[in-house]
Structures are given as structure tokens and as C-alpha cells.
Length: 300
Image 1 (tube, rainbow, N blue to C red):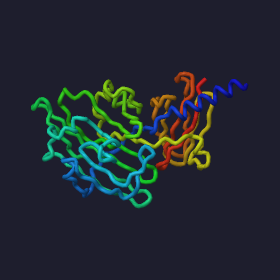
Image 2: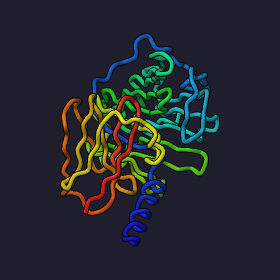
Image 3: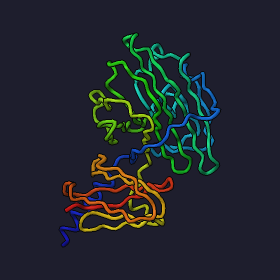
Image 4: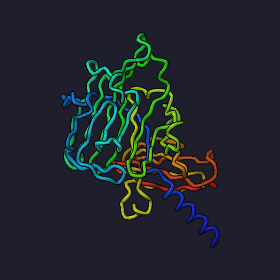
């Protein structure tokens, strides 16, 4: 019995300390352009910087301003702390078409639930083949209080066959953890990139209406004092969730790979069968009302 407890404790330690700095959930919705946003012409010269209406915590560091450049948000002047939503091809100013593109932002909601929304409208680059095209629409949302980050993907027009690698992710200057979306646009997962030189991102642009949500990881032990807005129960076959409101859950393995993501409607008991999963420990991230909770399951 003592040996079993020690093994279980070791697994919990691996789960907590091996976890990525952010959790990831993919969902869908209707992409809506910002209404009367503030246009940032300075974004094209990479000199624009604006104060945030609230402090935002990113990789455990707090910032009160940001810089917006095409497809990217940067929190530091050296661009060491960045949130990137697309092709690194945009970084070369000679490949951009500022006359055809627009970078803007808007602030919605009221304190303490405001959202800074940065929009890249018809962001267009000069393709290698002049007969081809590459134009995308997207938004990056920064949430007050929860410090969530969301990528909202709009319509894209990509006919240049030279584009086969798409990069969506984060970089932090302290220790340089590089988190990025891997897999495919249909079944993406958030990973920690070990070798940037060989990492290829995903092979296609996410479709119109796709939403990527990233929430700061909080160790399960620190959530014991919070009242969970749902009920969770382990069963022999898997687990059950009961919530008064719609929630999203994501199952991840011990190295942070996304195994399954799904929405659960409110006021119903949802059962999930884990018999198809390999034996071992998994974390279930449950997102409800801008809060992320974690449950542990063991498949035997």
C-alpha cells in the first residue's frame, strides 16, 4: 500500500511540474469584425506602443502596455515576450502590403471583465509567385482578471502553395519557453517546442470561426479553496460532469498533449468513457465562466 501511494505521489508531481504554462482548448464560433476600432498605422513601422487599460499577467509577469505589429503582440521592446498568430513571413516589412491591410484594436466590457481585442484585417503579404495570394483575418483577445488569451480566426484567402507551415504560439524571455500549436488545424494540441529549428507548426490555416483559448495553468492543489461551479465524479468507465451552465473540457496527458476536447451543455449529466485511452494519469481542464479548473483521472 505504501509503495502504491509513493507511485501515485510521484505521478502527481510529474503532472504538476511537467505541465505546460498554459492550457489549451479549441472551439468554434462566429467571427465578428470589431466595431469602430482604433486603427494603428504605426504598427507597420513596428513603433506603435499603447498602454493597457488593465494589468495583464503573461508567463507570471505583469505588463501594463503592449506593442502591436502585424500578426503579433509584444510586451517588451526587444520583442522577447510575444504572442504570435501566424506566419513569421510577416516580420519582414518588405513582404507586407500595408495599403491593403489594417491593424486595429478595441476595448470591450467593463472592469473587472474587460477585453483588449487586437484585429488584423485582410493582412496581406507579397507571395513568392505574383499570381498567388495570401490574405488572412484574425484577432487576439486579452482578458482582464483571468489573463486568458484567445485567437479568433476569420476568413482567409491562401492560394500560394509555398505556404505549408503556420505558426501560432507564445515565447517568454525568462528561460525562453516556446509554446506552440502542433498537429493539424483539425486536431491541434499545445506543446513545448524543444527544437525551434526543426519545428514546422501546422500545415494549414485554421478555418473561419475557429477559436483557440489559452488559460494560465493553475496547479490542482491551489484550487481546493475555490467553489467549483460543477460536479465531477470518477467512474469505473471514465468520469461524469454535471454543470448548471455550458462548460468546455480538455483531456491532456502528462506531457501536455491534447487528447480530447469537448463542450458540455448545462443542466445535464455528461458521461465520458475512457476505455479507449492508454493506461496512466490524465488531467481534465474544465473551463467555466473564464475560470479553469483541473481534475485528475487515472485509466487502469
